[in-house]
Length: 323
Image 1 (cartoon, rainbow, N blue to C red):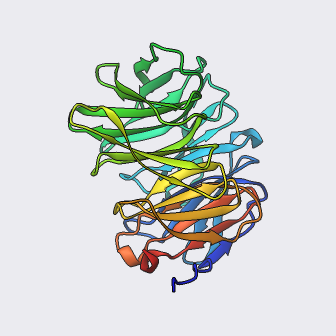
Image 2 (image 1 turned 45 degrees about the vertical axis):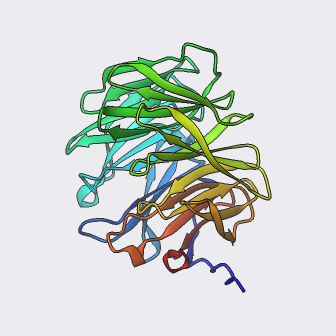
């Protein structure tokens, strides 16, 4: 008999609006934190030891925060993306709550940016543009444009993307409105390959760089995994069907063992990453789950899963022993 799914380890309340984005900061010195971005522009800095919001950053003129990311080289740096079409870089060191840099974007869509830290102090940022199908890549230190990536064919609006460092240089996978995935060589500003992965718009994707395998989801019931061969060609791999359609976000744990999904049906699903074996359906939320994230604790048993929902709550789960 299979074990019943676990209950949440704890619940974080008080966001005051839908929770759209999550980012952990647990490595290094200092207490572990979880950052959350809300539908009313607030960024909560949750201390996971006290399980309380240590600080609340009022950002983006009250517009929804749709993406957050912490920097590996500095615990005190945070970047946020809001529906006010602004990117903000925050200095949170020594109890500061200051925006030290910002960039006015041209895109009014919902596509989240993607950050790639190339070396300590340097990073590339991929962001949507005013042209719905294009990706712009900039060097973050000075916001210097690196390239613009535009598909040759009509794939529709850019929906989601993920950038990572390959042996050959920076690579970006973008999901489009027509269900296609396009793999870009950022250095040479050209496409490696294209794959029609879904009949509906690609809502989210994630990549396991070590295994050269990724996964994407849409408004349908199917999660589709795909691989990259030695020539960087995208190829269909396994798929799994969920009971209910729609997924907001996908997250592969850093050890490459499990995958979590944020469901439109209010549930969090956990799969074994190797074969997409369903492991658990985590039920707590009363509205759509918008975001899932795994913590970056260095000690594997301490690693957590967090989920942010339209019901204004964040559920935090300890599922290491369940995997």
